[in-house]
Image (cartoon, rainbow, N blue to C red; front, top):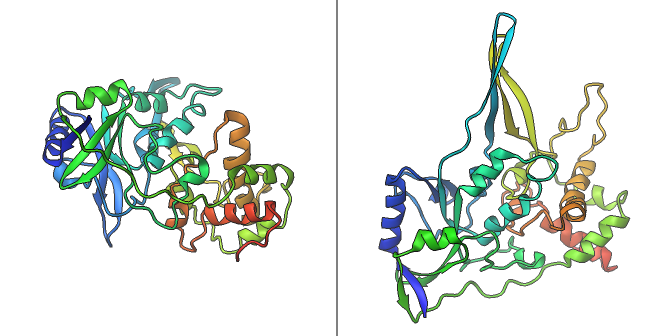
Length: 339
């Protein structure tokens, strides 16, 4: 027997969470038939099962674009510092694609490495993630190439599987997921399934091994020719996490703020001396791929990518990482890469 929930009951659950003061997020309709993960004020705003992938990721709920770390104020010669208040909200995210959910678990060791980032960790602890098994995939998806899949449970507290006719099978994986749906489901003999198996598009292990031996390689200039350095790929990526820390305010008072940044910007590694160790886009492209598929795995045992395809899907020149990875994988096997 399985547990199912009717769409009407799901809407009641979402509205009840909002009325309790919880932050609820999920896919919402944007312009030009696009969708985005965003906070909602009612269940009617959310499309739990949109017809296409949201163009951003849920990392915005645990790693905000802008976050105050502390404020400062001078009173004469005395300086006072006030830490930003702890994050105490409860967040529940619905309709999350499995490739977005797995990203949080990939980032967990980073934010608890040499420093426990209480900002990230508190948001993670207070967030419940309900995924939606993918019924639709597109040419940009490559999660199976990284060991995941359209109904992967990694990083999810619960999962919905579309049964059609306004019904969803509910699978729960954690105490948070079980608590969320307790008393909200009914038993059934129906069972859901995800999309047809997604073909593996490249050998991830072959890519990693090639990267170990080819730091300086013509491949970087070959694959970066159409990159314009806009950084869009990093902002829509579920796992990219570069940030800058800046001071805002004046000489009397202000705040220290953490904001998103990207390794694809020309000024990201620009020194005050004028030297830039990654002055060319090919060097920045190399850094991004090496970091995701060699450096991060060597340090944490996890590839810093989920195969969501957002970077290529949202790239103005259709680059992103998948075409680069396929190019590298072909080179690793001694094949002629597709142009």
